[in-house]
Length: 244
Ligand code: GRF
Image 1 (cartoon, rainbow, N blue to C red):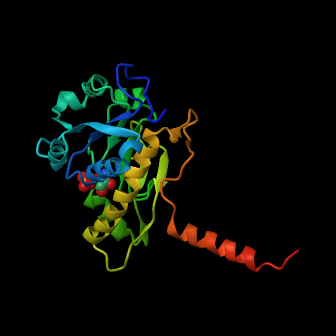
Image 2 (tube, helix red, strand yellow; image 1 turned 90 degrees about the vertical axis):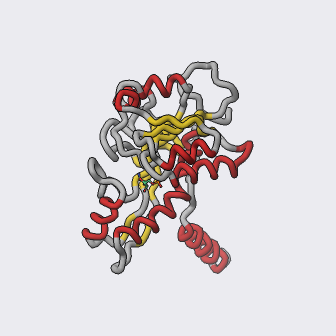
Image 3 (cartoon, helix red, strand yellow; image 1 turned 180 degrees about the vertical axis):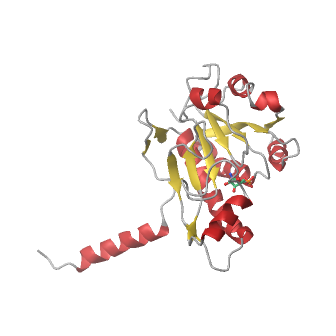
């Protein structure tokens, strides 16, 4: 089995490949990174984006979807609240991905798709998260705090803002000369690497949310360069050790 089939969907779907819905409110650069990554994986892709939905009719994310030949839905208030679960079921969605989506996902969705809703947040949760912490607000708060590290968090979504179990984080330095804008660009660059790879792992069933609320994975989406370096040091140490 290549993709994960969510029990909330019917068995009418073809091929075992996760059907992914992306919810986005803005520019959709993370959506684009996901589309590009899945396309680069080719036949090894564990899923496909079948729906992009937005609470903002003018969101560039919707335009990106149309250009890629993916159904794009501008949701009104009813559709993004009590109607969202029905929309996702109608499209037989297995995995819901929030890529810059500014609305709270209804509990009907986070419950039925438990462990199948993933969000990207542009700071190291649990710091700098919660209601109102989005976009430049996040980076402004990080800069103002004097923290010298930030970076994206990819996490499972529950019915609170920025609250579910963390799947992956990647540190990004914060420089004393940073503005919220310069920091935001540096973090976004890393989001584009980390987010699609984590989504692919969840889509493939390689990364799961256990019944105990803990994340288990058989695959680390990205190896940190300095881990590779320390592995190399380990090899050199072993090589230099005197024979026993
Ligand atoms: C990203 O920084 C993401 O972490 C946050 O919203 C932003 C969305 O950017 N949740 P884009 O729309 O993907 O370009």
